[in-house]
Length: 258
Image (tube, rainbow, N blue to C red; front, top):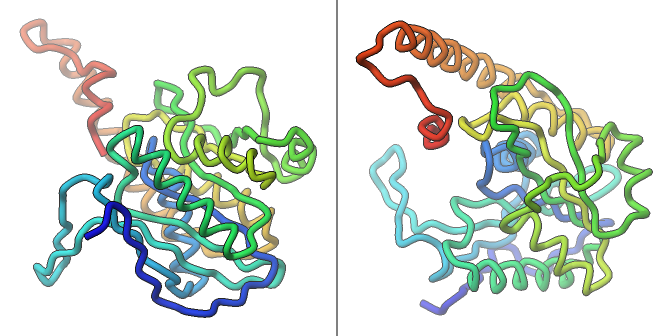
């Protein structure tokens, strides 16, 4: 196997005004949840699979006990305004070098497809359980800000304060060199748990941008289940506060959940 290997599933693809959406695993899995939901609801066609030494040395096991080497995949979702090319996957690179090499590949593929706009999706960690529907944005071209504000995206000075790590940020930087407009859209999330509620808020913004109507019911159900888990965690924390011999639940402990 090569360092990075691309397996084309669909050849000679012709796309209508294509846009790339990147939803890889990250904070709260917010972007991953949104992109996977788009792929499912819009009955997307798989374009290709990407395998790489830069992904963790791991296979996934399905419901039939059959394994699958971890990978990234690109799908195309056909809509009236745009063909949406969705990049989803099991993992991001496990190394800095791998991030640069894989993001360079993603960008090369986007250019081959004739893509002129990229949206990377992710979560903005607040460090506390949050119930806001706010979506924050960052862009590689300041002219995109007014356009995205019309769809409900907020922009705050110097936020995210620590920058944007991983493919969601790196693709914005690399695409600027290629003069491809790109924006990172981030749903606010605690950063402790998989957050379908934040994904639901981000999905609503995506639906406005692309003028599409998608059932958010499955994400709503997952959000309700997650709220129950959060409520139970809070109960345990309150109980432990009243028991001196037991340590309370610390923020850093919760960061490993989900």
